[in-house]
Image (cartoon, rainbow, N blue to C red; front, side, top):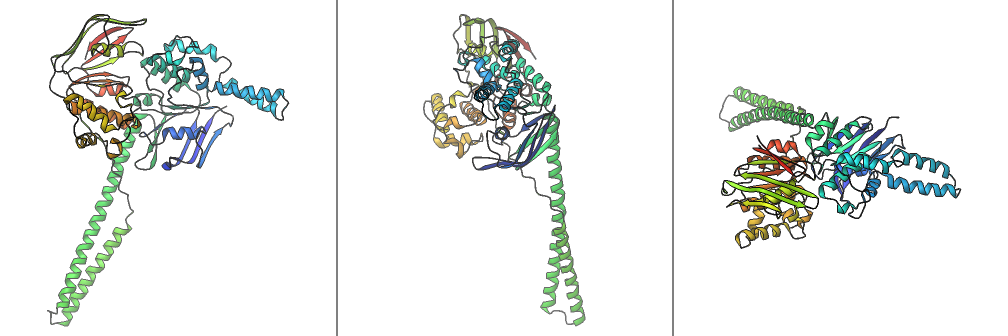
Length: 550
């Protein structure tokens, strides 16, 4: 039986702020609808509304058949004490289905009215969600993902890469009829991304996905819904990300052209009307001055002035009758840049027969050097040793063998995945001032810091807030501002696009493409990697590093 999710005339608000109005959407079997828009435009709020986590205030959400299962799988921070099995059961809806089945069985045993139907419904849902064989399927799914661990192992004991795989496993195990996926590709390596892509493409029921990964959306999406917060409009486009981007650009060019044509015609008519009115007024003044003694000539001049006034009125009326074309709202686009500091030594950093041992994992021996002006992308699966390699190269991790060398005049700017420097309740401006004082020995003037942050799109509404309240995009810009003030000549970025919206990613792409210093980039975002102009790729697999010049 086919499944259809219908959204009609839906208004969505958050904290007394209307995000969008009048959304009409039909999700059918085999369709993958991407919902796109900047952070805060309502993508997650829409999903929460569809699953009933938030009330429907205006409009409707209908599911057919009514007993179809619908699952929302957002990006969440797992409970460290929760086991892998418990996490998978909760995320797939099996834990809730277990509880409902137990309640229905209790009611059936007690002979409650309607208990038999309730139990049959609960059992059908329990089976549909795959509860009967979930424990058997868990290792079968986790193994190929690279998460070969005890299902009873607490999530807090997993590495960052393993935790990302646990989230992927939960999605791959799910058997909902309708899937709502919120940023499903965050933290996934190439293997995990391929598995996620295959899963979404192969899902028989409707899928609604919010993602910043443009390449992923190009592969999976059959259409795109844009939540345009700035314009307060909803756009519908066929195809994936590239088709959407092209269609949106064309629509904006056409809207601008239509407005310019309308404005030019209106201005021309108004200008002609104004000239006629000026001629008429001048003619009336000449007649009133009484300089012409012949009455018939005066009347002739007055009639000519009246005709000019009438023509002016007709021209103004013609301008008013034009079909009004609203001026497209000009979207403000932030474009920031990072100037590289003084040149470092020719060899920025190097490893000579370097070995790092961390538990059962071994990196190396590694021999490589990062040269001045190099632009390097580090690739590899989660857990392969990418972050360990970066730590060893920068001297942040002790070596168990070999040698590390950091070149002279190196000024590092390191952007970690979580933007940890800003994970504090201190105001943003104070964090930046403190960090800059560590460079020069004296805190800069607060006004200078505010001016610096403003250049990166962080105004008065940001700089006095607790730093931890900034979005990931805002945190990234704050750190880039700090790197600018430090005059860093080596940028090290670890998964910088995680949790960023596309606008923020494009801002970062532009800044990195123009950055003249040395760049070391760890990212699974191939669109970003391709945009920054690489000189080398370093691939890490099971602790072994392969270097390829481009």
